Image (cartoon, rainbow, N blue to C red):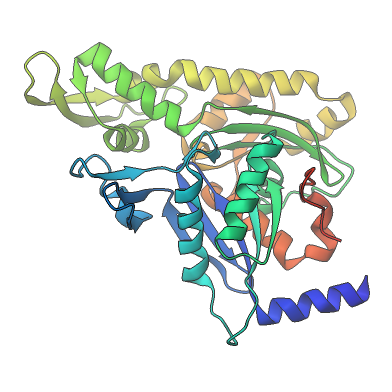
Length: 355
């Protein structure tokens, strides 16, 4: 074990260790010893005539809905899993090459830990692993996102006590109870930030006969979105195309309108949390009532979501510090302490666990 540890450290010195939160909406990259170095949208712009990648990340997101027919700004992950293997591989290669500095001419590629949604299939795990290896990784480890988020939130995941984490990203919302370095109970729901954007688009069409794009819907959600009535009313202009006249139009929408638009999806997430509480073993539930429910991911930033969950579950609820980066911070902490934390990594049928 000690020789293996020394060998690992020598390879780490020659290469580099990287943690990646490969999200549906955003991706973050953590480099061992340097912290988080990349936070970019998971968007790739492709020239369909030539197959050439024109832009990745923030540059590509600016192109969404603004490109000529032969250029497509696409998101290669859907609902937390890879939907376009080749484009995901290109995106991973871009991230890895951007952050790795080869110390020597024949330096090995980096070891990479990648966050994956809880409960994905072996085929989906293999797709992530293969894409990361093809992108230049020397070795690939997988970690389930709720576990990574809990570690990133500095919860005592290896202690014999219940920790309740809710990670709401772009494609999935994951609810997990963690104890003794493992997930005791978890649920994964493919309703999250992207679905809330779709709800706002649909609501604008049905309620105001206004056609808006995904970026506009997301901007509205961030500006005035909430899960529970606010103390002070909020309003913002909504611009789109009137479906009756075909002409541009601007209207004012309130936080009440947007809350109504997202109500059904928010309710489904809350119901999933309540169902998990109901299934939690009593001893762990006692721990959770003392420690509370912890929210991570971009969805944790939705105003008053913590208030609604606390009201519905009767358990104190708080968003973790910097919820957007909790998963990649957790994966990074595992990198920094691989010998002590390797038990939290995912074992797969075709991927031997690290020894």
